[in-house]
Amino acid sequence: MEYQFEDKAGFMAKLKELFESGYSYEQMQIYMPNGDHDVEHLIEKYHKPSPLKYFTLAGGLTGCITGYLFTTYTAYHWPLITGGKPLFSFAPYTIIAFELTILFGALFSFAGIMILGKLPKVSKMLTPIDHGNYFVIKIDEEEK
Image (cartoon, rainbow, N blue to C red; front, side, top):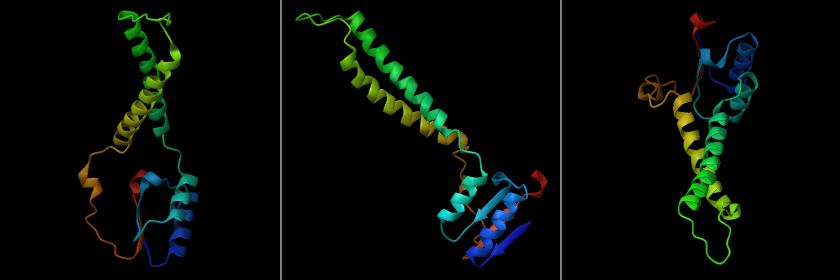
């Protein structure tokens, strides 16, 4: 089933009606001549949030733990005791842990985007049909 609109108002009304009648975002393909925040907000209202935040959290925690373990391991196996300095001083270790938290969080987020988006899949990125200046909603009836 395909709906085609020339104006945004009719397109938004039909999209809202489809969401309220039980169709999910995964069943639809939406084509627009340009991006629109109103459509994004409508989809967010009826679509469950992305689990990407859990990838970022796992990466951040892994980075923080790795930072503290790495610096503690290094200080334990190659002690450099000079001037009465303690063997384990966690205040400077926090800098390394913070940096690894940011690095691992970013890397895990990137991996999460690739996994959740099922990327790279070039055939899904290229749209063979050009709809011009129309707002189009295509629905897979088999999945309902």
